[in-house]
Image 1 (cartoon, helix red, strand yellow):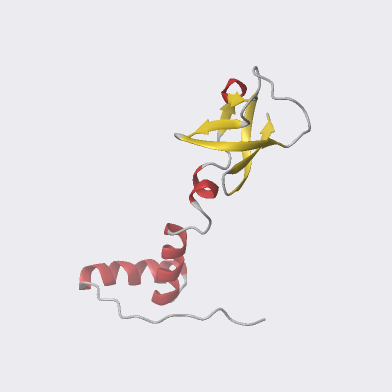
Image 2 (cartoon, rainbow, N blue to C red):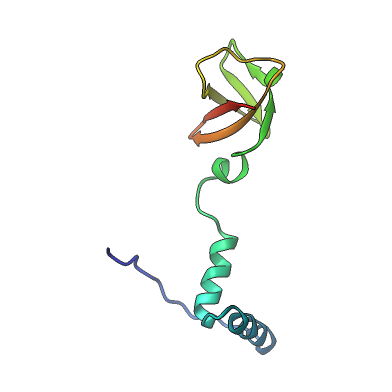
Length: 109
């Protein structure tokens, strides 16, 4: 398996911050570089905004507009698909399980 290419850059830290990072890396059993990579990876998750912010969010069934096929989530209108082939239930709640562009897949909960 090919290794992902890596970029190198110079990072300047004041001595106090460097010492805190060094101590945290030692406590975690990592090199300083590996520790910084781990911290940055957690702080900058992969995926688009919808995948990071909307997946798992609950939506009341009354918010689903059957006529237009749209739902308003976080101030943005999205097209929606239901996981099961049934008409939306106004009394039910749905959760967002998938996002592709402006289309959300909803599951009845």
